[in-house]
Amino acid sequence: MMKTIHQSILIEGQQIKIEDVVAVAREGLHIQLSETIKNKITRCRMLVEKFVQEERVIYGITTGLGDLCKVSIPSDKLCVLSKNIIMSHACGMGAPLPYDQIRAIMFSAILNFSHGHSGVRLKTVETLLNMLNYGVIPHVPGQGSVGYLTHMAHISLVMIGLGEAYFEGQLYSGKEAMEKAGIETIVLEAKEGLSLVNGTVCMTGISALAIYDSIQLAKWTDIAGAMSFEALKGTRYAFDKRINELRPYKGQIQAADNLLRLISGSEISENFKDYRVQDALSLRAMPQVHGASRDKINHALEMVLVELNAATDNPLIFETENGGVSISSCNAHGEPLAQTMDLLAIAVSELGNISERRIDRLVNPHVSELPAFLVSTPGLNTGFMIPQYVAASLVAENKVLSHPISVDSIPMSGYQEDHVSMGTPAAIKAYQVIRNVQKVIAIELLTAAQALEFHHPYQFGAGTSLVYQMIRAEIPAWTEDRVFYPDLEKINRIVEQNLWIGAVEARIGAI
Image 1 (cartoon, rainbow, N blue to C red):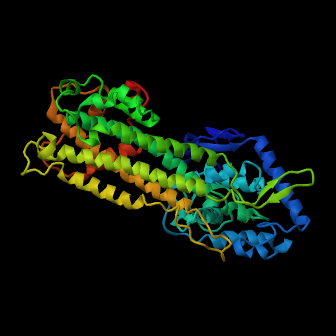
Image 2 (cartoon, helix red, strand yellow; image 1 turned 180 degrees about the horizontal axis):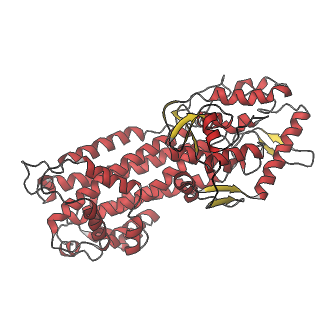
Image 3 (tube, rainbow, N blue to C red; image 1 turned 180 degrees about the vertical axis):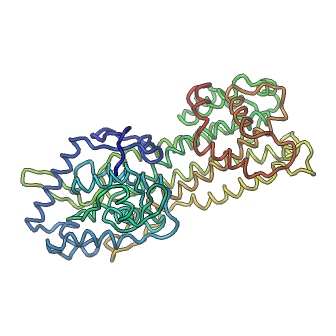
Protein backbone atom coordinates (compact mmCIF):
# COMPACT_ATOMS: atom_id res chain seq x y z
CA MET A 1 0.00 0.00 0.00
CA MET A 2 1.42 3.41 -0.96
CA LYS A 3 2.10 5.95 1.76
CA THR A 4 0.53 9.42 1.83
CA ILE A 5 2.71 12.16 0.38
CA HIS A 6 3.30 15.06 2.76
CA GLN A 7 6.18 17.42 1.93
CA SER A 8 7.02 17.52 -1.76
CA ILE A 9 8.59 19.59 -4.53
CA LEU A 10 6.36 20.45 -7.48
CA ILE A 11 8.17 20.32 -10.82
CA GLU A 12 6.58 23.02 -12.93
CA GLY A 13 9.41 24.31 -15.11
CA GLN A 14 11.21 26.29 -12.41
CA GLN A 15 14.98 26.39 -12.00
CA ILE A 16 16.00 23.37 -9.92
CA LYS A 17 18.84 23.91 -7.41
CA ILE A 18 21.34 21.48 -5.95
CA GLU A 19 19.63 21.90 -2.58
CA ASP A 20 16.56 20.34 -4.21
CA VAL A 21 18.64 17.34 -5.29
CA VAL A 22 20.04 16.96 -1.77
CA ALA A 23 16.54 17.19 -0.26
CA VAL A 24 15.22 14.46 -2.56
CA ALA A 25 18.32 12.24 -2.44
CA ARG A 26 19.13 12.43 1.26
CA GLU A 27 16.09 13.76 3.08
CA GLY A 28 13.38 11.87 1.22
CA LEU A 29 11.55 14.93 -0.14
CA HIS A 30 8.80 13.74 -2.48
CA ILE A 31 8.24 14.90 -6.06
CA GLN A 32 5.13 15.89 -7.94
CA LEU A 33 4.64 16.94 -11.57
CA SER A 34 2.53 19.96 -12.42
CA GLU A 35 -0.29 19.60 -14.94
CA THR A 36 1.70 21.75 -17.37
CA ILE A 37 4.64 19.35 -17.24
CA LYS A 38 2.34 16.34 -17.60
CA ASN A 39 0.81 17.89 -20.70
CA LYS A 40 4.22 18.59 -22.24
CA ILE A 41 5.29 14.97 -21.70
CA THR A 42 2.03 13.66 -23.15
CA ARG A 43 2.12 15.89 -26.25
CA CYS A 44 5.67 14.80 -27.03
CA ARG A 45 4.70 11.16 -26.61
CA MET A 46 1.93 11.59 -29.16
CA LEU A 47 4.56 12.66 -31.71
CA VAL A 48 6.56 9.46 -31.13
CA GLU A 49 3.47 7.37 -31.70
CA LYS A 50 2.78 9.37 -34.86
CA PHE A 51 6.32 8.75 -36.14
CA VAL A 52 5.90 5.02 -35.57
CA GLN A 53 2.57 4.95 -37.41
CA GLU A 54 4.16 6.80 -40.33
CA GLU A 55 7.05 4.31 -40.31
CA ARG A 56 9.61 7.08 -40.30
CA VAL A 57 13.24 5.99 -40.04
CA ILE A 58 14.36 7.69 -36.81
CA TYR A 59 17.37 6.81 -34.70
CA GLY A 60 16.47 4.93 -31.55
CA ILE A 61 12.75 4.98 -32.31
CA THR A 62 12.58 2.73 -35.35
CA THR A 63 16.27 1.77 -35.63
CA GLY A 64 18.88 0.02 -33.55
CA LEU A 65 21.47 1.88 -31.46
CA GLY A 66 25.05 2.97 -31.98
CA ASP A 67 26.56 1.29 -35.02
CA LEU A 68 23.27 -0.59 -35.41
CA CYS A 69 21.48 2.66 -36.34
CA LYS A 70 21.40 1.38 -39.95
CA VAL A 71 19.11 -1.51 -38.91
CA SER A 72 15.37 -0.72 -39.14
CA ILE A 73 13.10 -2.31 -36.55
CA PRO A 74 9.52 -3.35 -37.43
CA SER A 75 6.82 -1.52 -35.46
CA ASP A 76 5.63 -4.73 -33.81
CA LYS A 77 9.11 -5.26 -32.36
CA LEU A 78 9.64 -1.81 -30.83
CA CYS A 79 8.53 -2.92 -27.36
CA VAL A 80 10.99 -5.80 -27.59
CA LEU A 81 13.71 -3.35 -28.66
CA SER A 82 13.10 -1.15 -25.61
CA LYS A 83 13.21 -4.10 -23.22
CA ASN A 84 16.33 -5.50 -24.91
CA ILE A 85 18.08 -2.14 -24.61
CA ILE A 86 17.50 -2.12 -20.85
CA MET A 87 18.59 -5.74 -20.37
CA SER A 88 21.69 -5.49 -22.57
CA HIS A 89 22.83 -2.19 -21.06
CA ALA A 90 22.42 -3.40 -17.46
CA CYS A 91 25.93 -4.77 -17.29
CA GLY A 92 27.54 -2.69 -14.54
CA MET A 93 30.01 -4.28 -12.16
CA GLY A 94 31.52 -3.66 -8.75
CA ALA A 95 30.20 -2.38 -5.45
CA PRO A 96 26.79 -0.68 -5.65
CA LEU A 97 26.33 3.07 -5.64
CA PRO A 98 25.13 4.49 -2.31
CA TYR A 99 21.43 5.19 -1.88
CA ASP A 100 21.73 8.97 -2.15
CA GLN A 101 23.56 8.80 -5.48
CA ILE A 102 20.95 6.44 -6.93
CA ARG A 103 18.11 8.69 -5.79
CA ALA A 104 19.91 11.75 -7.21
CA ILE A 105 20.23 9.99 -10.57
CA MET A 106 16.53 9.08 -10.57
CA PHE A 107 15.58 12.68 -9.78
CA SER A 108 17.84 13.95 -12.57
CA ALA A 109 16.15 11.57 -15.01
CA ILE A 110 12.71 12.86 -14.05
CA LEU A 111 13.91 16.43 -14.55
CA ASN A 112 15.31 15.47 -17.96
CA PHE A 113 11.97 13.99 -19.04
CA SER A 114 10.01 16.93 -17.62
CA HIS A 115 11.16 19.14 -20.50
CA GLY A 116 8.83 17.20 -22.77
CA HIS A 117 11.35 16.52 -25.54
CA SER A 118 12.19 12.85 -24.87
CA GLY A 119 9.00 11.18 -26.04
CA VAL A 120 8.52 8.81 -23.12
CA ARG A 121 5.04 8.18 -21.77
CA LEU A 122 3.77 10.02 -18.71
CA LYS A 123 3.15 6.60 -17.15
CA THR A 124 6.86 5.80 -17.45
CA VAL A 125 7.93 9.05 -15.79
CA GLU A 126 5.38 8.55 -13.02
CA THR A 127 6.65 5.02 -12.39
CA LEU A 128 10.13 6.40 -11.82
CA LEU A 129 8.67 9.17 -9.66
CA ASN A 130 6.70 6.69 -7.54
CA MET A 131 9.82 4.60 -6.97
CA LEU A 132 11.51 7.70 -5.53
CA ASN A 133 8.53 8.78 -3.48
CA TYR A 134 7.82 5.38 -1.96
CA GLY A 135 11.34 4.21 -1.29
CA VAL A 136 12.20 1.66 -3.99
CA ILE A 137 15.97 2.02 -4.49
CA PRO A 138 17.41 -0.09 -7.31
CA HIS A 139 20.63 -2.03 -6.78
CA VAL A 140 23.08 -0.27 -9.13
CA PRO A 141 26.65 -1.55 -9.60
CA GLY A 142 29.00 1.42 -9.50
CA GLN A 143 31.43 0.63 -12.31
CA GLY A 144 31.03 0.39 -16.06
CA SER A 145 29.79 3.77 -17.27
CA VAL A 146 31.63 5.82 -19.89
CA GLY A 147 29.33 8.71 -19.07
CA TYR A 148 25.87 7.20 -19.48
CA LEU A 149 23.94 3.94 -20.09
CA THR A 150 24.71 1.36 -17.38
CA HIS A 151 23.47 3.02 -14.16
CA MET A 152 20.08 4.04 -15.54
CA ALA A 153 19.76 0.61 -17.15
CA HIS A 154 19.93 -1.05 -13.72
CA ILE A 155 17.38 1.45 -12.39
CA SER A 156 15.13 0.78 -15.39
CA LEU A 157 15.28 -2.98 -14.88
CA VAL A 158 13.26 -2.55 -11.70
CA MET A 159 10.64 -0.50 -13.54
CA ILE A 160 9.93 -3.52 -15.77
CA GLY A 161 10.03 -6.03 -12.94
CA LEU A 162 13.60 -7.24 -13.36
CA GLY A 163 16.86 -6.60 -11.50
CA GLU A 164 17.07 -6.01 -7.76
CA ALA A 165 16.01 -3.20 -5.45
CA TYR A 166 16.02 -2.21 -1.80
CA PHE A 167 12.76 -1.52 -0.01
CA GLU A 168 12.67 -0.61 3.69
CA GLY A 169 16.29 -1.69 4.04
CA GLN A 170 15.89 -5.14 2.49
CA LEU A 171 17.13 -6.30 -0.92
CA TYR A 172 14.47 -7.97 -3.07
CA SER A 173 14.03 -8.87 -6.70
CA GLY A 174 12.88 -5.84 -8.66
CA LYS A 175 9.39 -7.26 -9.11
CA GLU A 176 9.01 -8.08 -5.41
CA ALA A 177 10.27 -4.65 -4.29
CA MET A 178 7.74 -2.94 -6.57
CA GLU A 179 4.94 -5.15 -5.28
CA LYS A 180 5.80 -4.38 -1.65
CA ALA A 181 5.75 -0.65 -2.43
CA GLY A 182 2.44 -0.96 -4.27
CA ILE A 183 3.86 0.26 -7.60
CA GLU A 184 2.90 -1.38 -10.87
CA THR A 185 5.71 -2.43 -13.20
CA ILE A 186 5.40 -1.38 -16.84
CA VAL A 187 5.99 -2.65 -20.37
CA LEU A 188 8.22 -0.23 -22.24
CA GLU A 189 7.15 1.05 -25.63
CA ALA A 190 8.89 2.68 -28.61
CA LYS A 191 11.93 4.86 -27.75
CA GLU A 192 11.50 4.43 -24.01
CA GLY A 193 14.35 1.97 -23.61
CA LEU A 194 16.74 4.40 -25.30
CA SER A 195 15.48 7.43 -23.38
CA LEU A 196 15.85 5.66 -20.04
CA VAL A 197 19.53 4.88 -20.59
CA ASN A 198 20.43 8.07 -22.44
CA GLY A 199 21.43 11.57 -21.40
CA THR A 200 23.76 12.86 -18.70
CA VAL A 201 21.47 12.16 -15.76
CA CYS A 202 23.85 9.77 -14.00
CA MET A 203 26.80 12.15 -13.88
CA THR A 204 24.45 15.06 -13.15
CA GLY A 205 22.88 13.50 -10.07
CA ILE A 206 26.21 12.38 -8.61
CA SER A 207 27.87 15.70 -9.48
CA ALA A 208 25.13 17.73 -7.79
CA LEU A 209 25.70 15.90 -4.50
CA ALA A 210 29.48 16.18 -4.87
CA ILE A 211 29.34 19.92 -5.47
CA TYR A 212 26.99 20.49 -2.54
CA ASP A 213 29.41 18.60 -0.29
CA SER A 214 32.34 20.58 -1.72
CA ILE A 215 30.68 23.87 -0.84
CA GLN A 216 30.28 22.73 2.77
CA LEU A 217 33.80 21.30 2.80
CA ALA A 218 35.26 24.67 1.79
CA LYS A 219 33.62 26.13 4.89
CA TRP A 220 35.01 23.38 7.11
CA THR A 221 38.47 23.96 5.63
CA ASP A 222 38.42 27.63 6.66
CA ILE A 223 37.25 26.63 10.15
CA ALA A 224 39.95 24.00 10.59
CA GLY A 225 42.58 26.30 9.11
CA ALA A 226 41.65 29.10 11.51
CA MET A 227 41.97 26.75 14.49
CA SER A 228 45.40 25.58 13.33
CA PHE A 229 46.41 29.18 12.68
CA GLU A 230 45.64 30.12 16.29
CA ALA A 231 47.32 27.05 17.73
CA LEU A 232 50.48 27.79 15.73
CA LYS A 233 50.47 31.49 16.75
CA GLY A 234 49.98 32.68 13.19
CA THR A 235 50.54 36.24 11.98
CA ARG A 236 47.19 37.59 10.85
CA TYR A 237 48.53 40.39 8.60
CA ALA A 238 48.40 38.01 5.62
CA PHE A 239 44.61 38.10 5.85
CA ASP A 240 44.47 41.90 5.63
CA LYS A 241 41.64 43.11 3.39
CA ARG A 242 43.96 45.54 1.58
CA ILE A 243 46.26 42.71 0.51
CA ASN A 244 43.55 40.48 -0.85
CA GLU A 245 41.64 43.21 -2.65
CA LEU A 246 44.76 43.90 -4.72
CA ARG A 247 44.29 40.42 -6.20
CA PRO A 248 40.52 40.42 -6.37
CA TYR A 249 39.58 36.80 -6.84
CA LYS A 250 36.22 36.29 -5.19
CA GLY A 251 37.27 33.11 -3.42
CA GLN A 252 40.46 34.63 -2.04
CA ILE A 253 38.64 37.67 -0.65
CA GLN A 254 35.94 35.45 0.87
CA ALA A 255 38.42 33.05 2.47
CA ALA A 256 40.48 35.89 3.98
CA ASP A 257 37.35 37.50 5.38
CA ASN A 258 36.18 34.16 6.80
CA LEU A 259 39.49 33.57 8.53
CA LEU A 260 39.52 37.02 10.11
CA ARG A 261 35.97 36.61 11.41
CA LEU A 262 36.70 33.11 12.74
CA ILE A 263 39.66 34.38 14.80
CA SER A 264 38.06 37.69 15.75
CA GLY A 265 38.60 38.40 19.44
CA SER A 266 41.35 35.81 19.77
CA GLU A 267 43.83 36.72 22.50
CA ILE A 268 46.34 34.35 20.93
CA SER A 269 46.11 36.14 17.60
CA GLU A 270 46.39 39.54 19.26
CA ASN A 271 49.31 38.66 21.53
CA PHE A 272 51.32 36.92 18.81
CA LYS A 273 50.49 39.10 15.80
CA ASP A 274 54.10 40.34 15.65
CA TYR A 275 55.67 37.09 16.85
CA ARG A 276 57.03 36.17 13.41
CA VAL A 277 58.01 38.18 10.39
CA GLN A 278 56.32 35.62 8.16
CA ASP A 279 54.48 32.33 8.58
CA ALA A 280 54.86 29.13 6.60
CA LEU A 281 52.79 28.99 3.43
CA SER A 282 50.26 26.48 4.79
CA LEU A 283 49.17 29.29 7.16
CA ARG A 284 50.01 32.43 5.23
CA ALA A 285 48.57 31.28 1.87
CA MET A 286 45.21 30.03 3.15
CA PRO A 287 43.26 32.83 1.40
CA GLN A 288 45.01 32.11 -1.89
CA VAL A 289 44.74 28.30 -1.77
CA HIS A 290 41.34 27.97 -0.10
CA GLY A 291 40.10 30.80 -2.29
CA ALA A 292 41.25 29.22 -5.55
CA SER A 293 39.44 26.03 -4.63
CA ARG A 294 36.33 28.01 -3.73
CA ASP A 295 36.32 29.65 -7.15
CA LYS A 296 36.57 26.30 -8.91
CA ILE A 297 33.78 24.87 -6.74
CA ASN A 298 31.57 27.82 -7.64
CA HIS A 299 32.36 27.28 -11.32
CA ALA A 300 31.33 23.64 -10.92
CA LEU A 301 28.09 24.78 -9.32
CA GLU A 302 27.28 26.97 -12.33
CA MET A 303 27.92 24.06 -14.69
CA VAL A 304 25.82 21.50 -12.84
CA LEU A 305 22.91 23.93 -12.54
CA VAL A 306 22.85 24.21 -16.33
CA GLU A 307 22.90 20.42 -16.63
CA LEU A 308 20.21 19.87 -13.99
CA ASN A 309 17.88 22.11 -15.92
CA ALA A 310 18.71 20.82 -19.40
CA ALA A 311 17.23 18.26 -21.79
CA THR A 312 20.00 15.77 -22.57
CA ASP A 313 18.26 12.95 -24.41
CA ASN A 314 19.08 11.85 -27.97
CA PRO A 315 17.20 12.18 -30.20
CA LEU A 316 15.17 15.16 -29.02
CA ILE A 317 11.66 15.71 -30.32
CA PHE A 318 10.04 19.03 -31.21
CA GLU A 319 6.58 20.10 -32.27
CA THR A 320 6.44 21.77 -35.69
CA GLU A 321 3.80 23.00 -38.11
CA ASN A 322 4.49 19.92 -40.26
CA GLY A 323 3.71 17.37 -37.57
CA GLY A 324 6.84 17.25 -35.45
CA VAL A 325 10.49 16.40 -35.93
CA SER A 326 13.03 14.16 -34.19
CA ILE A 327 16.55 15.56 -34.24
CA SER A 328 19.51 13.28 -33.58
CA SER A 329 22.37 15.25 -32.06
CA CYS A 330 24.39 14.94 -28.88
CA ASN A 331 23.15 16.79 -25.83
CA ALA A 332 23.72 13.39 -24.24
CA HIS A 333 27.49 13.92 -24.46
CA GLY A 334 28.80 14.68 -20.98
CA GLU A 335 31.93 16.68 -21.81
CA PRO A 336 30.87 19.84 -19.90
CA LEU A 337 30.46 17.93 -16.65
CA ALA A 338 33.35 15.54 -17.29
CA GLN A 339 35.86 18.37 -17.46
CA THR A 340 34.14 20.13 -14.58
CA MET A 341 34.32 17.15 -12.25
CA ASP A 342 37.96 16.51 -13.09
CA LEU A 343 38.68 20.12 -12.16
CA LEU A 344 36.58 19.81 -9.00
CA ALA A 345 38.64 16.79 -7.92
CA ILE A 346 41.83 18.85 -8.29
CA ALA A 347 40.37 21.82 -6.42
CA VAL A 348 39.12 19.76 -3.49
CA SER A 349 42.31 17.70 -3.41
CA GLU A 350 44.25 20.92 -2.82
CA LEU A 351 42.14 21.67 0.24
CA GLY A 352 43.30 18.34 1.62
CA ASN A 353 46.92 18.91 0.62
CA ILE A 354 47.28 22.18 2.51
CA SER A 355 45.32 20.83 5.48
CA GLU A 356 47.71 17.88 5.84
CA ARG A 357 50.65 20.30 5.88
CA ARG A 358 49.03 22.18 8.78
CA ILE A 359 48.41 18.91 10.62
CA ASP A 360 52.10 18.08 10.28
CA ARG A 361 53.09 21.49 11.65
CA LEU A 362 50.78 21.01 14.63
CA VAL A 363 52.28 17.67 15.67
CA ASN A 364 55.90 18.33 14.64
CA PRO A 365 57.91 19.57 17.65
CA HIS A 366 60.59 21.01 15.34
CA VAL A 367 58.21 23.73 14.13
CA SER A 368 55.11 23.74 16.39
CA GLU A 369 56.55 25.12 19.65
CA LEU A 370 54.14 22.68 21.26
CA PRO A 371 54.74 19.37 23.05
CA ALA A 372 55.79 16.63 20.62
CA PHE A 373 52.69 15.10 18.99
CA LEU A 374 50.47 17.13 21.30
CA VAL A 375 50.69 15.09 24.49
CA SER A 376 52.23 16.34 27.72
CA THR A 377 54.28 13.15 28.19
CA PRO A 378 55.55 12.19 24.71
CA GLY A 379 57.55 9.00 24.46
CA LEU A 380 55.36 7.03 26.80
CA ASN A 381 52.47 8.38 24.70
CA THR A 382 52.47 8.63 20.90
CA GLY A 383 49.67 11.18 20.88
CA PHE A 384 48.68 12.59 17.50
CA MET A 385 51.63 11.19 15.57
CA ILE A 386 49.73 8.59 13.56
CA PRO A 387 46.66 10.62 12.52
CA GLN A 388 49.07 12.70 10.45
CA TYR A 389 50.11 9.47 8.73
CA VAL A 390 46.45 8.80 7.96
CA ALA A 391 46.06 12.27 6.46
CA ALA A 392 49.21 11.76 4.39
CA SER A 393 47.81 8.50 3.03
CA LEU A 394 44.52 10.12 2.07
CA VAL A 395 46.12 13.05 0.25
CA ALA A 396 48.46 10.65 -1.57
CA GLU A 397 45.43 8.67 -2.74
CA ASN A 398 43.82 11.89 -3.92
CA LYS A 399 46.82 12.76 -6.06
CA VAL A 400 46.12 9.64 -8.11
CA LEU A 401 42.35 10.23 -8.15
CA SER A 402 42.90 13.81 -9.34
CA HIS A 403 44.39 12.65 -12.62
CA PRO A 404 41.81 13.72 -15.26
CA ILE A 405 39.75 10.96 -16.84
CA SER A 406 37.92 13.23 -19.31
CA VAL A 407 41.01 13.33 -21.55
CA ASP A 408 40.94 9.56 -21.97
CA SER A 409 38.28 8.77 -24.56
CA ILE A 410 38.14 5.19 -25.87
CA PRO A 411 36.25 4.47 -29.14
CA MET A 412 33.34 2.04 -28.94
CA SER A 413 30.23 0.78 -30.75
CA GLY A 414 32.05 0.05 -34.01
CA TYR A 415 33.49 3.61 -34.05
CA GLN A 416 30.00 5.12 -34.11
CA GLU A 417 30.68 6.39 -30.58
CA ASP A 418 34.31 7.26 -31.16
CA HIS A 419 34.55 9.95 -28.47
CA VAL A 420 32.97 9.63 -25.03
CA SER A 421 33.24 11.89 -22.01
CA MET A 422 33.89 9.51 -19.11
CA GLY A 423 31.78 12.02 -17.17
CA THR A 424 30.19 9.56 -14.76
CA PRO A 425 33.48 8.04 -13.60
CA ALA A 426 34.81 11.61 -13.33
CA ALA A 427 31.92 12.43 -10.97
CA ILE A 428 32.42 9.25 -8.95
CA LYS A 429 36.15 9.93 -8.72
CA ALA A 430 35.55 13.49 -7.53
CA TYR A 431 33.07 12.17 -4.96
CA GLN A 432 35.78 9.88 -3.56
CA VAL A 433 38.25 12.78 -3.38
CA ILE A 434 35.67 14.76 -1.40
CA ARG A 435 35.14 11.88 1.02
CA ASN A 436 38.90 11.62 1.55
CA VAL A 437 39.30 15.35 2.16
CA GLN A 438 36.41 15.34 4.63
CA LYS A 439 38.46 12.83 6.63
CA VAL A 440 41.59 14.99 6.39
CA ILE A 441 39.71 18.08 7.59
CA ALA A 442 38.20 16.02 10.42
CA ILE A 443 41.71 15.04 11.49
CA GLU A 444 42.82 18.68 11.37
CA LEU A 445 39.86 19.79 13.50
CA LEU A 446 40.65 17.21 16.17
CA THR A 447 44.38 17.92 16.03
CA ALA A 448 43.94 21.69 16.21
CA ALA A 449 41.55 21.35 19.16
CA GLN A 450 44.19 19.29 20.98
CA ALA A 451 46.86 21.89 20.15
CA LEU A 452 44.68 24.64 21.58
CA GLU A 453 44.69 22.80 24.94
CA PHE A 454 48.21 24.13 25.41
CA HIS A 455 47.10 27.76 25.01
CA HIS A 456 44.81 28.08 28.01
CA PRO A 457 43.89 30.49 29.55
CA TYR A 458 43.98 32.61 26.38
CA GLN A 459 40.59 33.36 24.82
CA PHE A 460 40.14 31.78 21.39
CA GLY A 461 38.43 33.45 18.41
CA ALA A 462 34.70 34.01 18.02
CA GLY A 463 34.31 31.12 15.60
CA THR A 464 37.18 28.91 16.66
CA SER A 465 36.17 28.96 20.33
CA LEU A 466 32.67 27.77 19.42
CA VAL A 467 34.00 24.84 17.35
CA TYR A 468 36.52 24.00 20.06
CA GLN A 469 33.72 23.88 22.66
CA MET A 470 31.52 21.72 20.42
CA ILE A 471 34.39 19.30 19.82
CA ARG A 472 35.07 19.05 23.53
CA ALA A 473 31.39 18.44 24.23
CA GLU A 474 31.71 15.31 22.07
CA ILE A 475 35.35 14.29 22.42
CA PRO A 476 37.50 14.83 25.53
CA ALA A 477 41.05 16.16 25.33
CA TRP A 478 43.90 13.66 25.21
CA THR A 479 45.96 13.35 28.38
CA GLU A 480 47.36 9.93 27.50
CA ASP A 481 47.00 7.43 24.66
CA ARG A 482 43.63 5.76 24.09
CA VAL A 483 42.00 3.94 21.20
CA PHE A 484 41.94 6.60 18.48
CA TYR A 485 39.52 5.54 15.76
CA PRO A 486 36.22 6.14 17.63
CA ASP A 487 37.14 9.82 18.02
CA LEU A 488 38.06 10.07 14.35
CA GLU A 489 34.83 8.40 13.28
CA LYS A 490 32.81 10.78 15.44
CA ILE A 491 34.44 13.97 14.14
CA ASN A 492 34.32 12.70 10.56
CA ARG A 493 30.60 12.04 10.85
CA ILE A 494 30.13 15.63 12.06
CA VAL A 495 32.02 16.96 9.01
CA GLU A 496 30.22 14.68 6.53
CA GLN A 497 26.80 15.68 7.87
CA ASN A 498 27.68 19.40 8.22
CA LEU A 499 26.26 19.37 11.73
CA TRP A 500 27.89 22.54 13.07
CA ILE A 501 28.15 24.85 10.07
CA GLY A 502 24.84 26.52 10.90
CA ALA A 503 25.91 27.25 14.48
CA VAL A 504 29.20 28.81 13.35
CA GLU A 505 27.46 30.96 10.73
CA ALA A 506 24.89 32.06 13.32
CA ARG A 507 27.74 33.43 15.41
CA ILE A 508 30.06 35.03 12.82
CA GLY A 509 27.98 35.29 9.64
CA ALA A 510 27.95 33.31 6.41
CA ILE A 511 31.18 31.56 5.51
